[in-house]
Length: 112
Picture 1 (cartoon, rainbow, N blue to C red):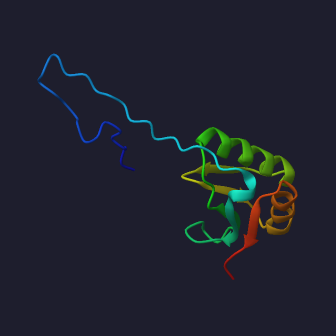
Picture 2 (picture 1 turned 120 degrees about the vertical axis):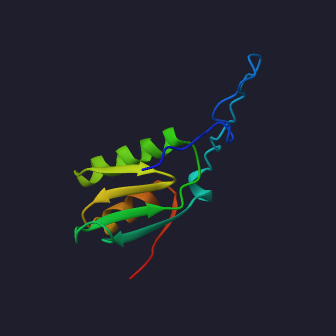
Picture 3 (picture 1 turned 90 degrees about the vertical axis):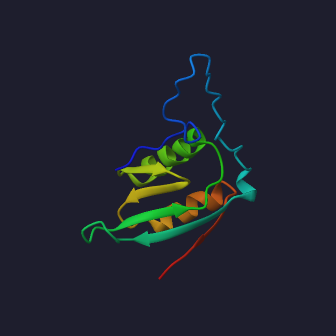
């Protein structure tokens, strides 16, 4: 897996006075009523194992991890999150959908 270069393409500089200015990549988290979340059942590239996928989260990575933790505790299973997506092991679409709508998220089932 390739590592991401967060320095705007600059890998090395011979200029001794060069200082890299980091870009802020974090987005501000939208309110739950403004989120457009989709709950999928996914088994692609997972050796036939089923996972529930929640996509469409707009916000900071810490808020995404907090929502991931809530969903994992609710379902009593493992999972992960990155790039605005939350993966929960197993088919827990109904539980997750009920939890998200109770928390005022705009969530709906998607996919087959």
